[in-house]
Length: 200
Image (cartoon, rainbow, N blue to C red; front, side):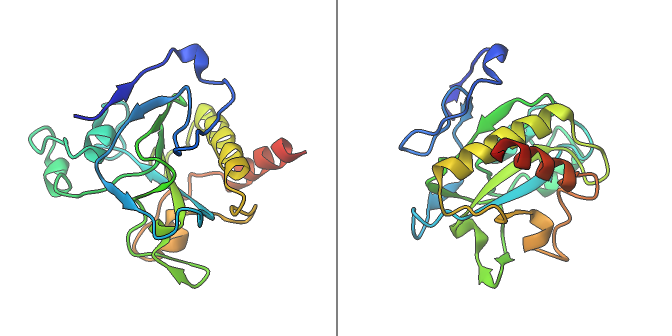
């Protein structure tokens, strides 16, 4: 069974830090079995933003966590029967209320990108960190999600120096034609303004 670590909601906006084993401190942890070793643990240089909801366009059921831990019940919803066999994960999930959950150490390879290519380099799982946002392509993401995403990206850039300021993309950018998330509803200019303010 996955190890779970819970924390009080008033810790949500405390400073994010990452320990030497690649885990965030003071956040919820649900360990996914869906990961393996990176070819080069020092070669973390890209952040990929995803969007996910289970069932589609429904929020808050905890089914994303179940999917990442291979515990999704195909009998709960007809859509689940088509995906429950998948072995997938992401390093982190940011829920609609801004709650941040980590599933895989940043030093390990989460299975989030699939067949992908970034700036001519294939297999993005090898060198990227995957962040899932609970949402859909065509529904606005929440203020709390943008705030938490900003904090997380700033923390990752500080911890892993190879992540340049332009090394940030959506799943659709590295798998065009195959993936569309985080979708048109994701406000890239807003995120960039927040990140710029954090650097000033």
